Length: 466
Ligand code: NAD
Image (cartoon, rainbow, N blue to C red):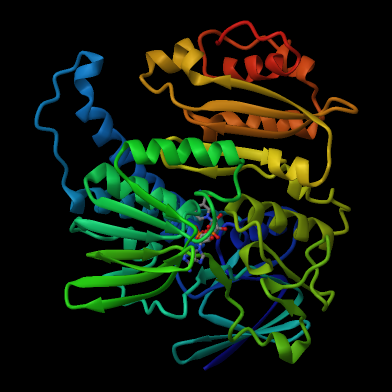
């Protein structure tokens, strides 16, 4: 059976890039269709950001409850039910996905289930079981995301050699877990499973955990993980993981020496690959590069009626970036002349404990680019609020460029870093100086005061702290 429809915009992929783009298109009066082969929400809502935050919350609470005595609580024999933790996470994902389905209906976006192929610069075909839909469209937005990268020597079996998706579903705790890759995914799951009692080893090819973060932040997180018993081997390049019955043997190399480690489960979290197969990019002449689809600053591909947004266009692979790119693409096609996206002002967050959040320059990058800078730091150990909360590890580190004094980089590790960072994203966008941040009255007692103190520190006016 074949049906044919005509719209202004067709969005392929309903993740946080695609569904946000579709909503914005509808708000701007465009007739909009969205094609998705699974449920809307993409990796983020179904198998990433949201369900993982639910798991992390359970782990964090479990750990806190075990320390209840230090808060004057009697919480003896605290235990957990892993299946119930996983079920809660799935339920939360389901609820948020239902919310997106509601929004698609509210904005009268035609939701077509199936796999889309681009036939021409203004035509998409969708194949669903036994049914084909031809879509005539003025514009197309590709928002198909990524999937986990495989290492040549690691063949995932979904049971003992797994990716983040299966790591979200394990209902039996692995006694020994080896995490390959200390990026955001690796660190979040290492934290989750170590809280629940697994013996966790992290193998990271580069010289530190969370290698995109500031060196001091990586060091602080590594120190905290080691304190909780997580083993970390850096400079460790994994070459293979082979299942042998109920075990997995992982081979890796450190400084030229070959090593092996045995685990019950190994999680490979070594990056992502763009989902471009089956889209028909070559047929219409859409150019690609090693990380996915090439676009200009307005998210237009080499075919001007076709835009691409989100993970499929390469780093930073972050949901909030995908959404911003989706809004930008739609506003551009509507002739609204939107501001360019400033990729230097994108916050990045990792939700293990200690939490990590940052924006802009790291100190290493400032040095590499020979930017003259001043630093301000404040430790949560000197924050009354952090001490009262029983969570006083970590610090705020701010980097100001010397010439005009504006904030160029901000790094928080500990506390509520992922909630606190936005003050600094705004400050960076407004090119706020240390004086402007430091003389802004922050409520006492709050973790936010640490930002004020770090700013004051950079001009020699810090009040608290050693
Ligand atoms: P990543 O690229 O952030 O980290 C992968 C890590 O694996 C790197 O540090 C890399 O050096 C290491 N690695 C690669 N090959 C290796 C090998 N052979 N042996 C040992 N280590 C090796 O990727 P990820 O953690 O898989 O996450 C994928 C993407 O999703 C990232 O861009 C990430 O930022 C994003 N993400 C973000 C969040 C968040 O914002 N909290 C959460 C999850 C994922």
